[in-house]
Length: 521
Image: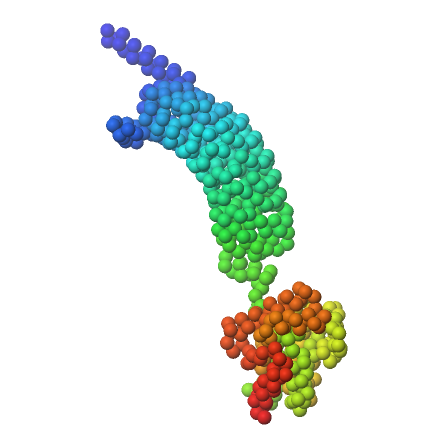
C-alpha cells in the first residue's frame, strides 16, 4: 500500500511538472505568486489581492478564472496569448501582460475599475474600441505592430499612453483626451499637428520619427518635457512654436539637422529662456546671460561693448596729450549734451545755445550714415558719410561713442571734440539715449539735458507736418517719449535736467537759465 501511495504521488507530481512544462498554470504555481493579503472588495473576506508570475513560460492561465478577488496581476515575460480569464475578475485594477504573445487585447469583459494596463512587447496589430473602459488611466502598447491610433474616444480618464516602437505614420484619434504623458517614439510620424487638443499634456516623447516641424506643440501651457531626438527639424525658426510654453523645462533636439547651424546652442537658449535642460545638458545661468547678451543685449551691454571697441582701436593709434585734457585732473572738459526723441527740438536748441553763448560753446556735429533731410547741411548739421567710411573710422579709433538708431549709424568723433577744445571752447552735441549710454562709459563728464515733449499728440502732429518721416518712424518716435520719461523715473540723476519742449521758446528760456547757472553767469 505504501509503495502504491508513493507511486501515486510521483505520478501526480509528474503530471503537475508536465503541466508546468507545457505552460499550463496550475494551482501550486499560482499559489507561489499570490501575495498581499487584504479584505475583499465586499469587505467580507480576507483574501489575496495580488498575483505576480513573471517569466514562468506560461501560455495557459485559464485557471485564474476562479481568482475573482485579484486587484493587481503581473504576468510579464510569458507566452500568453489569451486573457479571457480576466472576464471573471471584476475587481482588477492593474494588469501587466507585457512581453507575451498577444495578438489582440481587451478581449475580455471589462473590469469596472481597471486603471493601469501594460500590453507592451506583444504582437498586437491594431487598436480596438475601448469605450467600455471608462476608468482606464494608463495604457502601454509599446513594441507592438500598431499602424493607427483608434478606439480611445471614450477613455475620458486616460492620462498616460505609450505607443513607442510601433508603425504609426500620423497622430490621430487623441482628440480632447486628458493625456499628461505621451510616448510616440520610434515610429514613422511626420507631423505633430494631432496633439493640438491635448491641453493637459505635460511630457511628450516624439524621438526617432520623421518630424520636421514643431507646429502643433504650441498652446500647451502645461507642457514641461519634449523629446525630439533623432528627427528632421532643420530650422531654428521652428522653435517659435514652443517659445511661449510657460512651463517648458526640458527639451531634447539631439540628432536633428538644426544642431549643425552656427550658434545653435546660444540661439536655442535665447529663444527658450524658460528651459533648464537642453539636449541632455543642464543650462547654467551664465549661459542664459551669454545668450541674451549676444542675441538681444540690454542697452547697457550694447553701450559697454561699443565703448570697448572704441578704446581697443584707439589704443592701437599713436598717442598724444589731447586738447580736451585740462591742467587740473579734477576738472573734466566741459560738454553739454542735449538728448531726446526724434525731432523734438534738439538740433534747434543746440544751435541756439551755441549762438547765444558763442564765447563758451561750439556745436559738434556727429557723423551719420543716413542721408540728409531737407534743409540739413553737411558738416553743419551732421557729417554725412557712407557705411564703409563709418566702419573705417571705427577701426581707426576715430569715435568717442557710436550708436544705431532706426537702421542708421551715428558717431561722435574724437577729432570733432578735440578741434573745439583746441579753440578753448566747450562742446555742445545732441544725441539719442543710445549715444548717451555709450558716452557715459568714457572719461568725459558732460551735462546731460533731457528734452522731451510732454504733449504726445502735438508732437505726433509736428512729426507729420515735417513730411520727413514714415508712419512707422513716427510711431516709434512717439513711443520713445514714454521710454525717456521712464528712464528719468527709474534712474534718478541719470540726466542733469529735464525740459519740456512742447513750446520751443519756453524750452530755450529754461535751457538758457540752466547754461548760465552752469557757467556762473
